[in-house]
Image 1: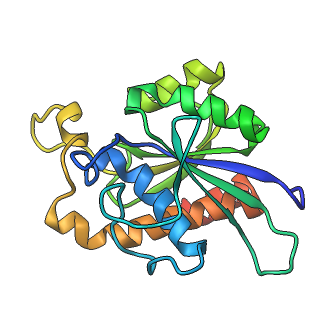
Image 2: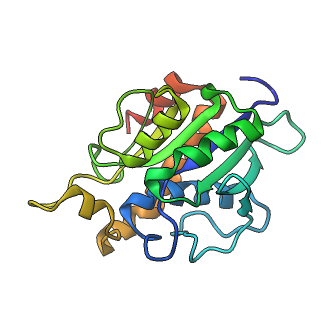
Length: 213
């Protein structure tokens, strides 16, 4: 990795208090968790954070996103710079802000990490990959269309399949259950670790580490 690489880490979700605790917003939760981990004076890692509930350093950016900037590694070292971003558009319009952010910060596609919920992974599990299909995820569809490629890195946070005959669209727009919320801090922390691992050691080593959990 470049000593002074700049990475864009995007957490997908929908804006506003109505959606803040939804399963569909777990990507945003992870990115806020990651920001809190590195920002001076931030809240302790491991609690549910949202646009509505967490005070923090994310600020509005002209690209229609909330942005925070952090660095990995010990102070004094050559540390990768992470631009953490949360689009303020609805999920199905995420691509525009991300494309604008990439242009503003001169980010190459290989330095884009997208964190999102994944129905096809058991709840609480975290997987990483590069490229592939969108699996019906409207945020990923918007990103791929706007960027003209699917070859970006993804941190996929499992939320599991809906129970019974519940429509997946309804399931993702519901809040995590009380049982799920007990395990959520660990899931967010694991996903934040996966983002850091992608930046620090790359895709293959990260897959070997997190896919064995």
